[in-house]
Structure formats: C-alpha cells, structure tokens
Image 1 (cartoon, protein in one colour):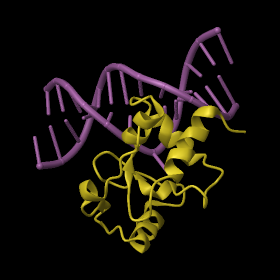
Image 2: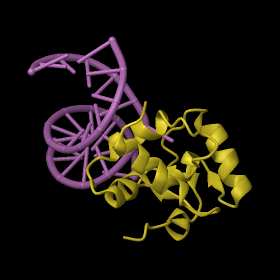
Image 3: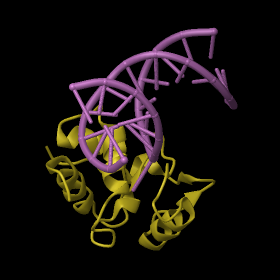
Length: 103
DNA sequence: GTCGTGACTAGCC
DNA sequence: CGGCTAGCCACGA
C-alpha cells in the first residue's frame, strides 16, 4: 500500500526529464517538506513503480548518487545511458544538470 | 502508542 | 579538508 506522501514523491520523480537529475532535498521541498529528505529516500526505496518512476534520477544534494535499490553501480550506469555521466560516485556537472521542480 | 531504521542534510570538531 | 553528531520526516514492527 502507498501513502499520499509517497505518491507525491513518485509523481515529482516521474516528471524529471531525461538527462536531468534532482536532489532529495529539492524533491522534498517540491512536496512541501524540505526537511523530509530522508522520508523521500524511504518512499523511493519502496517505490512500487520502479521502471515507471525514474528514481535513479534522484541523487544527494551534494551530487553523489547516494543510494539505489538496485545498487549505486546500476544507478550510475542508467544515468550514463541518459546522458548523465557519473564519476567516482558523483554526477558530472551535477549542478548544471540539476532539475528544479516548477512550484 | 512507542521505538527503531533509512537511498539525507547541515553543523561542529 | 575529513569525519562525526544531531535533527529532520515518514513508515514498519
């Protein structure tokens, strides 16, 4: 079962365009709880819409991959396929590829 | 209803 | 600059 909070997380996550990435804090802020970054990670981890919701486009606020249900390696690989290069567990030009949600 | 955990963040030493 | 601690939210047991 899913809660309203989780649905919002996945919803925002799904609207992230290909080749772009966002941070947990930003996503949390978009939902309305900028301090709920951890809760966001929780929701994504339990994301039942795995392939539908590109949770691999969500990284830490520092540009690091952070974590991934399938492993950070897979996350980095997928991002690379979308045009987002990952080096040493960090997103290249993360700041430039950072996607902000429309309020 | 309370405790513990987690894909985090920011501050402090 | 690097590592550690405290605080935050939501969920499961």
